[in-house]
Image (tube, rainbow, N blue to C red; front, side, top):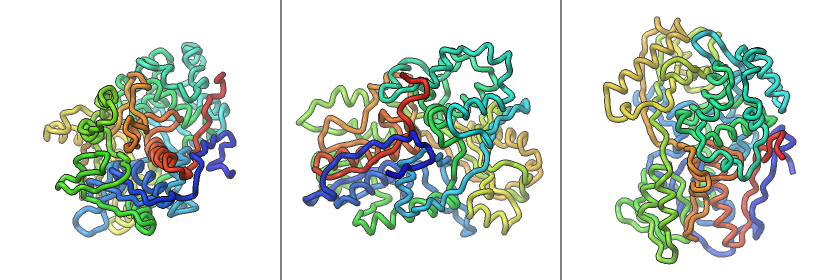
Length: 500
């Protein structure tokens, strides 16, 4: 079979065998219109299942949604920049349903990482195939010198190349990413740029983030995959480029899309909406954010099974700390040499800076018409105070902009014409607790399956790709029970270069 990318070691995981379509009329409620829910709905509908998808928001996309702003000038807002890595085989397969050549994704030429002392790393021009990728990165990075390399804990560093799935995460049960980084003894600058920046991109402080997830991430994105660390981004806002076309395809498949519709209860007989309406069905796919999932699953009742232990494990999952996105429309442009995307470390709460007109058509149109840049600032793992305290939120926004002016000093002279601030705390936190305790796709209830990036998956996937993968696995689990063929999955290699 043709491979989904350039990596000849990519692994195909066959879906369940069976008939091309279900042989009876079956109805499934998919709760959640993010990536996992859309993936599950697509796979099920393509095989003849009658799907109704419920999304509490008025738009699809979940945490990768976008929406227009008032004023009619074409400005849009989202929850922040997302990188569509080339390792995201299953997410890309979903997007190919409406864009076979992935022409709506455009490459970002570089992904520099920067510290205030001037030290900077880049992934442009580095070989993509391991181990040449890591050797090229170490050779080019100013953080690695003979003296700093001599202090590295070699056995710990070799663990980065000894990853083996399934079972990888259990090796690091109880160890945080911060503990692992301490044990690794990488030079401080390399830890900041090459490791901690990526840990924080999971919306987590490294002290609360799983070491197993960090090591798996390095395997999937860099040390175990030949796809490289450069990525693509949509050429337009997420709704226009991705979800509106997919929604239209789902409607043609017979899927009923009910946005702005909140589900209150799940049960064997179907789902009950907040207004009291009961929508009956044969099964439910729950694909919402972890906090919403905990609330819904705490109320699930099935007399046929004992849910006590499972509910305890669901309740133990946690949300990541709040994040802040600030999008600015400027009366003037940042310098042309500024990268489209910059990861940062050491700039207070500022974790990355995006110049949106460099890749997003809507922002580019606004930039041409008004002669200004559209810049986005992102802060991960903020204090809880930004949620409820307006003063704390305002101080965080002010500090983000102050730190950004250190990076783009010319922007300090450009007045801000529009400012949009978004604060949320609904992202996933993969904690150091036992990986096997995390709920998986299957549940004790034969009518209920789970999808989302908070759900345990023993493949080397994370973030958007874990959402897409678990959504497909949820659909496959139901299809297998009905004797229908499922969807094949692809992942990066299941073992590191030095794994036994």
